[in-house]
Amino acid sequence: MGFIEDERAFVRGFYPTFEWIESAAPTIRTAPPVPLERARVALVTTAGAYVTGQTPFDRGDDGDPSCRCFAADARIRFSHPGFDTVRAYRDPDVVVPLVTLAALASDGIIGAVAPRVFSFMGYVPDPTTLLAESAPRVARELLADAVDLALLVPA
Image 1: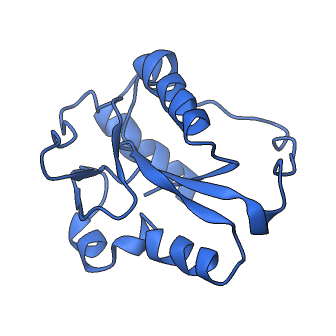
Image 2: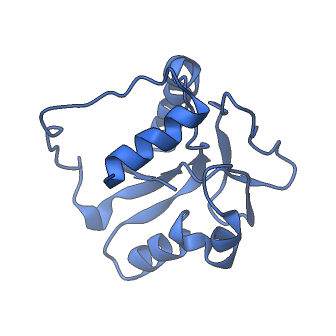
């Protein structure tokens, strides 16, 4: 089996009725509203990152469509059944690349790092709540933070 078939078999083992959505065409490319060197860049991750005091992501069979928001300079933790969080703790920048974004801002490649990070758990087999509630709330928060560009970093 190839990678795609392996992934689908893995998902079917946990969520047999999962509906795959495929697109025949790539998404339309859109230029950022401002040049990168002036852009405020936010980070949205599916690494299941959260901070002390927040509820960890639910590791149940139905996944967790909720979101955690925290300061970009916070010390993060991970709760995600879909990948080995031990490696993420060793180098959080792999799944929550705030050090890299800060370096890009320091070097003038981007204008600034947004003040908050938005974190989801990537395992959400039924995206109904995510699409109807969590994602629109995060979109409003990104607009409130005057974000020009949001990077989605999958785990």
